Image (cartoon, rainbow, N blue to C red):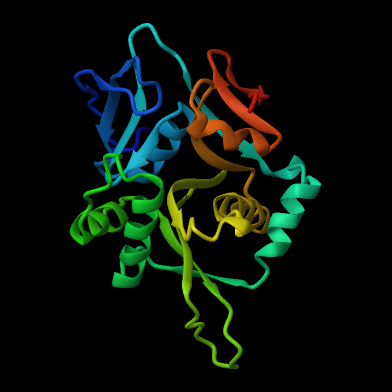
Length: 249
């Protein structure tokens, strides 16, 4: 008996636009709306096929003559805690992580704008308004968490009111955690906060009994993606399915 609430999705393809990773190429995406009576099931099935979520849409690259984007995920059970990764984890022991509902605050947006100005001043998100940010965070048809990372305070109160250092928007799936978007105090270079956020998601996934942390796409020729090679073992989505994958930094 079929689930009458499930609606087979309609897929659309975007027109070519400049690739954000490889300057000499153009990208096209196939996308569909996570709608109908079973958006969670649809999201999970598409994630297994290499799709990513943005608001209420799932998408993946379908670029003509190019297959540079490889969907990657960390295999949590066998994660290799190298000495350098342990140092980064320990360096941020003074951060307190709090799970919150996917609801934005002015403090988060202020941190996001500082992050974009320092790291992605020429990117497509540079002109984002707080309304754009709210749409990105609050428009989710699946289980989503907004995780705040703050400096621990010295008082004994239950609420941590220390400075906000990082925020991660994360989808919770049956087999893992999918890091949708994160931003942080990038000027705190010694903390390596971008790496720490991924390490914390590995820890969270393990505590939740999840198998994977989904990191999105890795592109061999893009320096922006090189950091993902640090997290081993990685699995990459190939024509034969998910396989162990060793990118080069």
